[in-house]
Every structure is written in C-alpha cells, then in structure tokens.
Image 1 (cartoon, rainbow, N blue to C red):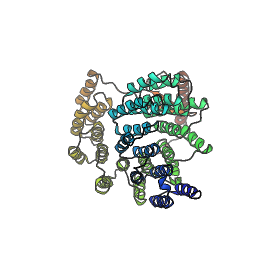
Image 2 (cartoon, rainbow, N blue to C red):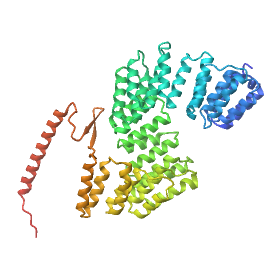
Image 3 (cartoon, rainbow, N blue to C red):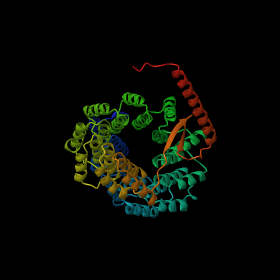
Image 4 (cartoon, rainbow, N blue to C red):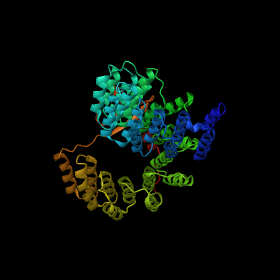
Length: 533
C-alpha cells in the first residue's frame, strides 16, 4: 500500500485524456484504493477538472452507498461547473437524506449551481438552511450568499445581508464580494463608495472595480483605477491584467497595452489562453494587427475564442480574405466555430463585399454546425447585401427574418439608401428608426442628405425642421488621444479639459505655421511659368 499511493498520485498528475482516466481508475480498483473516500475524492476532482464530469458522476454513483461529506462536496462542485447544474442541487438535497450534515463547503458549491440556474427561490431555501445549521456567519458561506443574490439581480438583499453581518465578520473576502456585487450590476458609485470604506484592500478588491468599469464601457475610469493600484504597490494578477487589457482595447490605448504585455513577460506570468486572447484583442483594436497575429501564432493552445478574436481583428482591419483563410485554417484544425465566430466571419465578408462567401457561411451555420442564426447574423447579412448594392435582396431578407428587425438593421438599410440614392428605401427605414431611435440625430442627417443629393431641398429642409421641433439634438463628435500612457477624451465644443488653454495656444501656433508654409509654397511655385500648350 505504501508504494501504491505514490503511484496513484503520479498517475493522477499525468492524466490528460479519458484513456488516462480509465487506466488510473483501473489501477485504483486493482489496488483497492477505490474503497478509500479520500483517494476517490481526489480522483473525482481530477476527472472533473479535465472535463470528464459524467465519468466522475458514474464513479460517485457506484460508491454512493458509503459516501462522506467531502465526497459529496467534490461531486457537487464538479456538477455545478457543468451544463447541467441542476444535478448539483439535486445531489446537495440528498446530503441530509444520506444521514450527513452539509458543511461550509457544501453551501458555496450548491450556490454556484443556483447562480448558473438563476434560481433565486432555491437560493433563498439554501440561505435558510445555512441559518438552521449555524453556518450563516461563516465567511465562505456569507460570500457565496452575497454573490448568489447579486447574480440573481437581488442586490438589495445582498446589501442587507452584508450590513447585518459585516461588522461581526470584518473579512476582506466578504467586502470584496459586496464590491464585486455592485460592479456586477453596474452600480459603480456604490462599489466605489464601499471600496473607499475598506480598511484592508487586496488585488481582488482593486480588480473588482477595474472589471466593473471596463464592463460598463468606462475604460478611462478602469485605467485610472489600474494606475492607482500600481501607485499603491499592489501587484496585479491575471484577472486584473485581463480587465485592464479590455479597457485598453476599448480605447485603443496601445502604449499602456504594450506596457502590460511587457509587465507580463518581465514578471513571468503564465501565459494562459484568456490572457493571450486579451492581448490579441487589444493589439487588433489598437491598430497593430501584425502584433496580434504574432501573439496568435506563438500560442501552443488555442480556444474557439482565440480563433474568433483573430478573425474579428482581421475583419476590423478590412482584411476580409485573410479572415476567410483564418476561418478555413480553423476548420482544418477541427476547431468547431460558435455563433460569435460566424458574426466575425460575416462581418469580414461585409467589409470587403464578399457576397457569395457571405451566403455560404450563413448557410453552413445551421446545415453543418447546427447553429440557428440570431438577429446579429441576419444583421451582418443585411449589411453585406446593402453595402454591395443588393438592396432588394436585403429587404427580402428583412421580411423573411423570424424576428423583428432592430435599429442596427434598419440603420444598415438607411446607410445603403444614402450610398445608392434610394430615397424610397431611406424613407421606409426612417419610419422604423423614428420609433426605435427617436433621438438619434444621425438618422435624420442621413435622410436629409439623401433628399439633398437628389435635389429635393424642400424635404431636406422639412426634415431638419422636424429635428428642431421634436428637440432632437446633434450628438457632438469626440476623439481620443494617448499621451504618455494616458488617454485623453475631447468632445466637440467642450472646454473643460484642464489643459484646454495650453492646447488652444499650441493649436493657434500650428495654424500660423501652416499659413506661413502655404504662403512660402505659393511664392515658390509662383517663380515658375508653366507652358499649358
């Protein structure tokens, strides 16, 4: 027995596929290790971590006559991470029927399943059971309950629980859970207020805020929090890096994104697939498609997200043919595309007018991969057809859609009607857009331009008058610039930037220099006489 246990642990470490799992299980049966719940627990945990939860459950069921709470907890944890989390709750409910008592690990694992199911009433029942067992003050249980209420959109219940118990359990994990809960629902004011009240903060506290701001499309604020974290000498972890890279991608903040990449390499971070995916996305959205490809090519393991991100990046840069080649390479590697992959490849076709290929990909979605087209896929096809001038076919596809067209689809048709001078289509699209986006000034401007291009000045004027009468205001343009790893936003007509006066003075100097340069150029070319014969 002394030699078999080290052999067993060695076999578990080497497991990477179902064949290895079968061999290890066979070894356990031959040596009698399957009769020991401790070793059985470790085996089941290894099975589930490799994605073989069904096999793990069959092993658990076979030994169900003599389980202990640790074995139950391990199996509940495994099932809570699968596509059938209801099985985890069913197993949790069997604990007491087996004569056992749930402990402070049973509840969090069961609540993970509740989150995936969005089953708030089930979560409340488990909450009551934590009180009955006297574990409602355990920090692991409290944290899990707060997360459950937040994910089930019951943030007020989470806060009540936190307020009632936070003074008795002053644990940073509990506070982090509440900050993350607010960030999850987009209540960043309360998240920040609670964060600032914390006497003890760790990298998870900072990351919760950074992720919250990035998720709510507030990348400037996310980056500002990331910088504050650095000033506090808190070393970012992988999750913080992912959140910061997401913010960089939204802003196109290349300098900061490159700094994060260098930081990752310098500090020896393990380059996980999600981290590489985030770098590909950041480089692609920051205009460095070559660097994105370099990260992609250096990856040993790629997920469907990796391929999709790369295809989307190529599409963003107008490299439609390269995106198509990437999709073909993906299929050759036996990587099954998902619904987001098809959005990316259809966008690639749309950007370069590959109508026939667009039709092909749209058709194989369901025929080959069993993916039912969603409104986003229809929107991509309609944009493709509209841009290429197939306006009648685009309208027919709108009519055949199994769902109502949204503002993006009608906007594609309106934009196409402007390109091809089709006022009738523009009016039809505008009728729908006035209901869906009544305050979008851009739609009114496009139709007004269509009328003007056709010499229908009366209708163009009436449309602009309608904008004034209904209070539709033109949205001011804005631009971003990155200077010394900091992104500055400028909105047309806004003078609130702290360096506005200095920027304005420099702009005036540049304009004067351009005028002088133009004058010198005119004088220079004025010296020459050209023979126009």
